[in-house]
Length: 114
Image 1 (tube, rainbow, N blue to C red):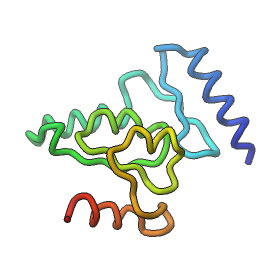
Image 2 (cartoon, rainbow, N blue to C red):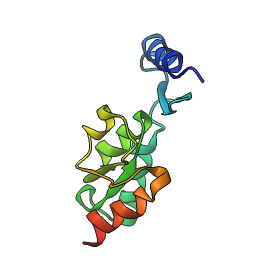
Image 3 (cartoon, rainbow, N blue to C red):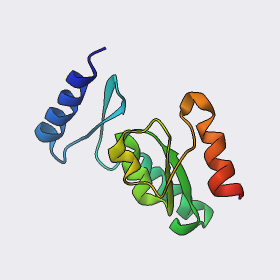
Image 4 (cartoon, one colour):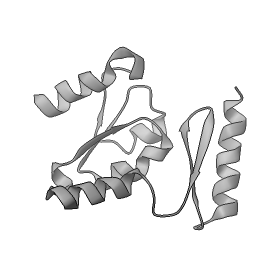
């Protein structure tokens, strides 16, 4: 329950691991550590290529630091309403609600279907 401590762990892991692994919080209460080159951005690139979809045709939604690679790989990244400010700053749109307030559906309606 110590979110500040998890943020500190994330920072320490990034400094310690360098480019040998990727560390990022996927929620305020835990930190994911994965092999380099394996992240949400890579899967967006692979799926886009496999489906013949350009970056500009891809929209993604995310709410945490581990979504930033995915944001960079997409033409239109959308942050959830509950995302921290540093994640929102990397988005081209912000969902009109949080994960618990049907923010995903609202974002699709606002940015994709309209």
